[in-house]
Image (cartoon, rainbow, N blue to C red; front, side):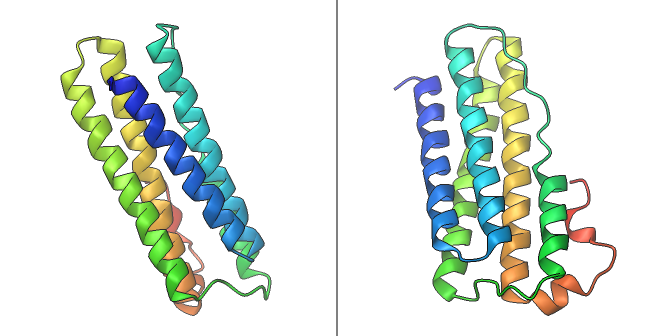
Length: 161
């Protein structure tokens, strides 16, 4: 399987997993964040499809962290319960594993490909996946111990990564 097909398959699987996470949570804020992450994976897949088709690609930094920060702030102002279910936390950790594998894949491919523009795009995709990993870590902390996570008025958890 070529690298583009494999990368698109990874992105499609990540998108599907985030859609399942969104469906399995009752918390509106988390549902929104998981749908945002799924949408990001769709964008990544489109970028890879363009690379494969030799269409000039442009990848701009996605602002998932700043959007998630606003959602966490909204969640802190409501009394809506978070998913304190151990199975959900395990699923969030699985999502982190998916992101970790994507990061490693993109960094490896950035070193292997010959086209300079592809190197840059693979590195940029790795950076975006790192943001997803970081966001998932914050979700795990948030649902595991919301009283500690929310008490920090500075919201340093999601400062630009």
